[in-house]
Length: 293
Image (cartoon, rainbow, N blue to C red; front, side):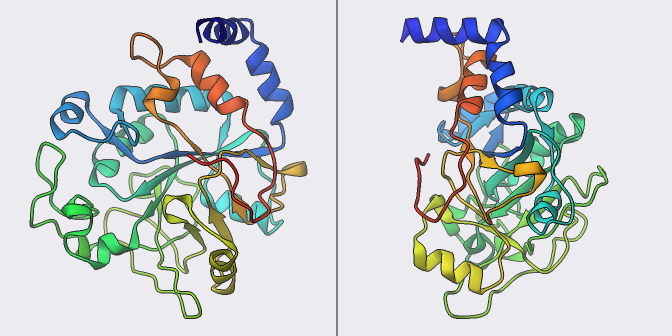
């Protein structure tokens, strides 16, 4: 492990990793996957799952790194490339969030504003349909306690959102494109109206993320039958985009967790993050699940 770490650090310091990335991923789309972002003190008090939670400082460092090495794009940009209306820029990257935690708005959003970055959030549909989903912690639009935990009055069902294309603007209400729709095999899909004053989204729903990244041929067929043009998975893969066009409706994503990219000090290791992001296979997904996280 020590030898591997030393080789990785040397490759990063020499610029070899960055050169490899610039050449190999010139025509590609990388999707980074996040879940929760909390201040360090709240992280410790709330006993958040470290596999799915980043501190605010750690997340800010990751986004700053990604902005240096990629061209950040929106969900609308990706849909346009899929429909061959507009090409993606070189080394395109989409920031995505899963679940729909309140702290995505409270803590991730200010960082994205500061760094002029867009993101798309896939909110769990049950979180807005059922009171007490996931122990009441899914507080999209609800009231949460100061320690990051939800109160029993969390108004999860009051939140409404749909999938849509993020506009080009960078206003506070348009940084997030909230993607949420319920997949009903053999039936019509269901979508919700946006939460006024928080999200700027457009109807109808055009993309979905499979829960836990799990899918099979039947799930893919159901999603396509219901008209979803983009299907996000948890396959650890970079998506090829020859000449800027996205050839597949399936998009692999790279989950970013502290344990995978932190150095011995606990802070972000740029060398580890570079290796984690740059050395993934760049392959189209063909419906068979690949390596997952």
